[in-house]
Length: 389
Ligand code: CAA
Image 1 (cartoon, rainbow, N blue to C red):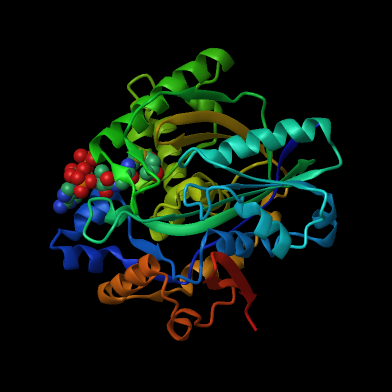
Image 2 (spheres, rainbow, N blue to C red):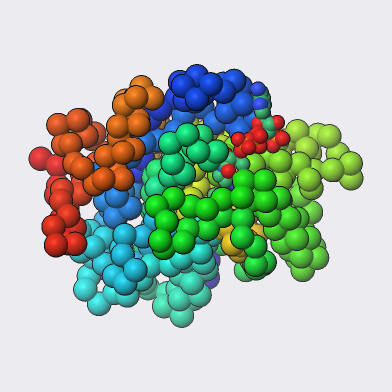
């Protein structure tokens, strides 16, 4: 019986800064950020949106009362955890009123762990056909003001409900994972921001993609033309493109290359305007692809997941008839379009407030119809969440 993604949604904070403004403020040619890196805008989160509230906001609209009874496991994938011990999924489980006899855990391996969560969910569901699993990928990507990684920041969460007879994407049994010990990007517990070797991280991404693709092709017999499209982890949109081009080589016909590169552009349209959301980036890209590209039922999508450190995985899924009706297209478009643009000065104030955990509700809690829950306070290390009136 088919197992896969039944429901899919996301949440991004309602503020952003433009790459033109950021480049000008940093004395950089805007084309470096817009063409060289491939980003237009970067989501900026207020202190009142942490990975937990963003996760709740991503999931709240897709869960029916029946789903809340059927969910047996809630997995949060993140590399921006707020606690070494307590899983972020416990608060999310509570706020979403999911039945109490559920497992709640948090998973970590840089930007990769949502994929591990999906594979765990798939295995679990194969033995528990009446159950569902909620996977939430939620992260805040911060490299520091004036840092090399600054134009590749972002914030947001994606929620995926996995079940039998999914409405969106049936997962195939073909995943191949690859682990390679490399210090390209990591976040020591003592540090506020990640430690990054930018050039090495780009090489490690491409090397991982090539290695895991070659193994996947060998094991499955698949070629690029078997897929209607590919979907990548998107730290910035140029990254997936660079990796993809290494397999769209002279052995691939031009018409196939053009078809696949056009589909790639559909898959990164929204990542270009949000920035890196780490664990959720591949799945935001999947939503962008599903909404901006037209599929026939049964067409195949190949997904490449990458987490620095590094773990990579390639797997695939088949498009389900009527998949587009299972996505709230208007909400997604409006959430992206209705955000407020911050000047660079204001973005820096938001950034510093986040570091100092200084709440400014007057400025932060503007009319955001997509944020029903926000972080209200942290007292005695206890986080309190409130629902917008
Ligand atoms: N017009 C057009 N293009 C320009 C340009 C201009 N005026 N000026 C420069 N460029 C191009 C460069 O040629 C370069 O393109 P290529 O990569 O094709 O050579 C591109 O813009 C970027 O230039 P640099 O590499 O010189 O930029 P940088 O040194 O400032 O760093 C970065 C870029 C490494 C991505 C940095 O932002 C960074 O460290 N980001 C965080 C790490 C990251 O995202 N790594 C990605 C792989 S790791 C991963 O995927 C996990 C994850 O999510 C973190």
